[in-house]
Length: 81
Image 1 (cartoon, rainbow, N blue to C red):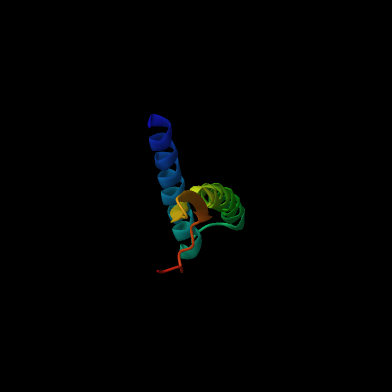
Image 2 (tube, helix red, strand yellow):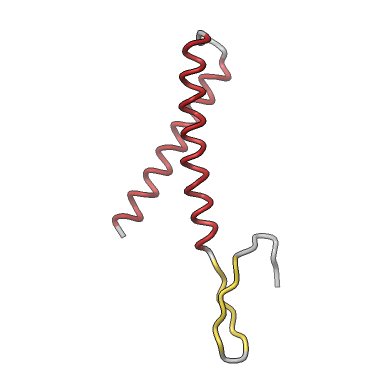
């Protein structure tokens, strides 16, 4: 459970930092060199967050009962019953 909590904090921390970087870039008060440094950091943070979200999406599944057997079906947000 601790590992899961650390992963969440890491994701949340990365996401918050990404928001800060985007805000700094949008303000337009940085030099070209500073902008490139922040842009690289933003891309790195985006990729880290995106990987965590993709991993989570792959782990989410719905268990359905089908003829007394439990089958695993990938989670689909748009799916409603």
